Length: 202
Ligand code: NI
Image (cartoon, rainbow, N blue to C red; front, top):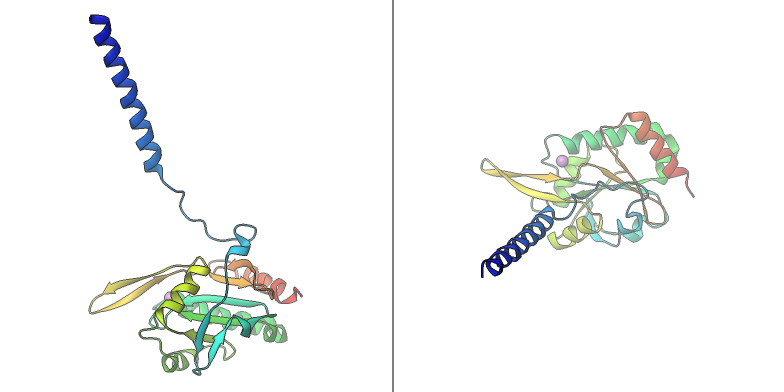
């Protein structure tokens, strides 16, 4: 009788240990998402989109087909990352010289509620006029954000709101495939070298 009870306790303890191990494994969950970089998930970033440019014209992936392009998600009310990045891109385009004409730079708003085509026109007058600013309906923007493995989040701020968003610029080849990201924290020479490689690639 004593042996049987001991055996039952041992079995119960083994089952409990297995359950704890299982829960611990489950809690570890998925690894955090990686920043995209060349070689990882390459073909998976990008894809078709249909948006409206700052002049009110329809703009799709076909308008950048066969051209290297840079895609950046942001919003005009951004206090910091967006103006810094757009100013940085403006300077990089100047540094590229005539090669910059081969490059299409797209600024895609994640705040279509406030960023109408007119609002984008006003905002973009501070930056290189070749940069195309895009807006559209929320669903179309969400689809593009998803396809680029980017993110954004609306954050209440006082009586208004701000947006958290992906800060990197996605550099896409002429074939529409993701090449590498550009990060404003990198030295300017590094960013320029990446862009030069991008525009030189046939
Ligand atoms: Ni921003």
